[in-house]
Length: 271
Image (tube, rainbow, N blue to C red):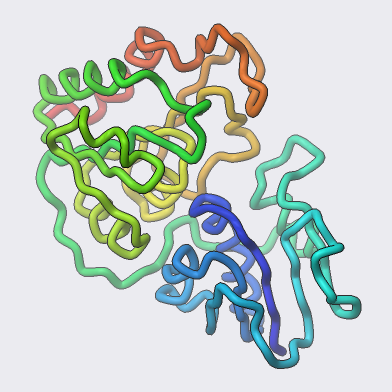
């Protein structure tokens, strides 16, 4: 049975439907993904789909699964399932997707199975200091203090910057600019530790099985936490998630609070 899955969005949004691809592939479906194709190259590499495309594919499909809240932009009528990308209930987004597709309880891999032969770089900590929204980002001074803290614990630091963080390159000497998720995966797999924000790169790091510390400032980790089994989440629990209409105080992104929460986690990785 041929299935078309539509999901436009960023890297993190795309990775969070990978379990749907995996479950359907195990059931024998032949999957074409229509979305930001560069974000689904890893799915194709991991044999979770057959085809990825940025443009509407031609051909007939037995089923179409549309992750979009706007039915008006599609001509699809029959054999189509529409799923709003954001849940109405407080539920992990992956569980929400599976529930909507009557796949609740189906097993999926917590680690993305890609056959990359990458050697670890001893004592390497990779930091991603940005995200798709500046509302989720701490001040630069936090990352500079974090870098000093990590160095006292024996880590070498490498920053990953993408298109959203290009302007930050002037603040960091030791950075690598990456756009291709395959290159990101190859680089991340070298790390002993990863630290980042609620971003697509953080989702990828956790999904690859890298020990990952992820800062959820104004966003809700209960809904948006990554796939994985070896990650720690930091969030200011004294106030509810307020993204995208964030408060002015932004205590959840305050430097001293974040350093305080990071220190006990970093003790696990003392070199």
